[in-house]
Length: 120
Length: 111
Image (cartoon, chains in turn green, blue):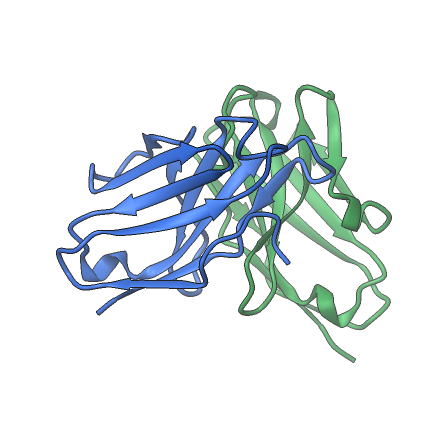
């Protein structure tokens, strides 16, 4: 069964960084493209970035471009999302999700989400 | 402000049908047949409902259907049931700065 398992909740102070992991089971990172989506409390879903097969690289939403780094360790099938210079507005649940094929233009499945709280 | 516009809420009685709209632009919904819909229960991750505008995901009955006209996509749920009460989000591939754009979400209430 294909599923994604994320790391646990984090509490960080403003200005710090957070690194969230996402391990895939039932397939490999090489076969798919992994993306990160966040959801602030009571708000909607927001795409942060992910691997774009057409570009052959990880693309970031412009809003996060200077603060986010997404990496993949294909030896362990684990992806990471690091967000730096955290501020209170970054308090959200961070989800990893995937396109199981470059020709699939939808996200399925999703990880369980990692709550990140930014508070002094 | 979300890139795709959805109504904040819709409601219907059991057995009725509802439609949720998702309005984008010629850069996303109007350009690509890559609209997907997701259902999200409180404190849960989203689940794929519809992909490529009209195709149902595994586990979803033909009570769920999707369509598109111009820059607006729609999700219709017929024969409403209590378990359909959830938040629904649309998503589209985009040629803009955001490669993927989501709607702001619609809260479906089953009366």
